[in-house]
Amino acid sequence: MRKIQLNHLNRLPEVWRCFRQSRRPWSVLHRYLSPHHSGYPFDIHLRNGIQITAENFHDLVTAWVVNFRKEYKMSSCAETVVDIGANVGFFSLYAAFRNHDARIIAVEPFPTTFAQLHSNVARNRVACRVDCWNVGIAECPGIRVMSGAVPSQYRGILPAASPCDGEGHAKVHVVTFEELIQNACSHFQSETIDFVKVDIEGGEHEALKASSPRSFFPIKELGMEYHPNQPKRQLFNHLQSAGLLLSHDRVIGPDVGVAHFRRAEASGSGPWCGTGCRSIAK
Image (cartoon, rainbow, N blue to C red):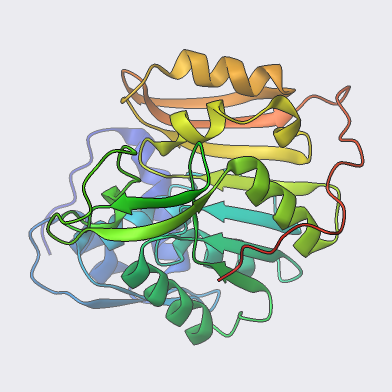
């Protein structure tokens, strides 16, 4: 086995979690430290029962940061969770197994990725608690285009005027963030949502900043990967104006990182999400 070399000592807790939580930790770690490893697809089996297939190195990295790095600081008490940019389901499964009473909405617009998400939810026998919605979020509702020419983890909603005939491009259905949250509250039959995760490859700047502050009132906590296509400060200010205060910001680079926001205790969420919302589940 190649000698393990880590750039920073603060990565050691991730390795420790890999060994504690994986049934085949050496196989996971060896592939994680070897981006060009040829041993894919590779089945990841965690001791909590999660089973998921990493089709490539990008899948393995996603599984690693969700399960071993604990990228998203979701409480084990979270019972209503919305996973925006669910990809093939790594975080949705993490949330479902972290709290066996949790109900999750997994939101993924790209057709083939959505099919894998649906399959992984069924494979892990959590379909009764994880609902898969084949939709994305954008500034305005309608049809947008996503590129399939990159790994699924890097696919985002293309600008509104983008042609739809590029290699691997797919037309996807999008709604506003406000409509998504409204429908999620209706689905959960709750006025609040415990945790919202957002990872939509730069689309957060368009979709979230276009939403009114009241769109965020039901949300207790939000974890978001932010991207450098626009400055983070405007986005952070918008969330804070809605009563979501920055609690943690793991800076990776200029305007790149993972931020967590928590609702200020003084800011209640009013009776905004009720019945009668139009269903967007596909």
